[in-house]
Length: 201
Image 1 (cartoon, one colour):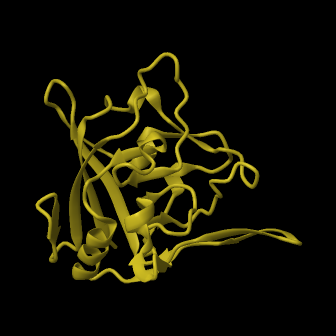
Image 2 (tube, helix red, strand yellow):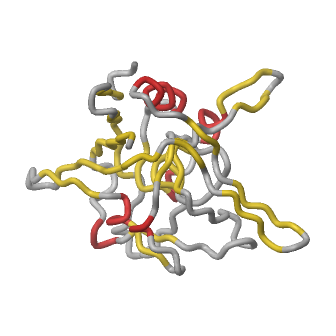
């Protein structure tokens, strides 16, 4: 396992390192819309709370090791009858951030504390699950999709998330209006180290 990824089988918990991805202090861009809770580098940092160097497939393996069972990512599709939504499945997970402010005070925050909703969806009611991403064929070989897309912990539904909320909202604005923004007053500054702790329930 990478040194930035740690696990405790007895407590069914994994932790991985990251940093705050978005800058909520720029007066020119006061509204930061979000589509992910955590992503991989050079993918969707502009719309993710945290970016982590740990490969999504390594996090998948760690969750298997602590006894979590993958299900499937959610799906949102437009049909002749309207919008069809299939919630993500898998072992329920608790997700939290551990970080220290500039004075050295340690904080433990739920992702919902860093998010505000512009829809009727209450982020505090999100249930996270081990969706497990999926395997796809790229360049003639089968690969773990989240390793390419960077969709580590979803907020909206791309269909490739390792960890996903059971709420299904499309990242396509033509299907669902953008719903989530960073809660600027609660966010640490960009680049702040964060430990993401995930516990299988």
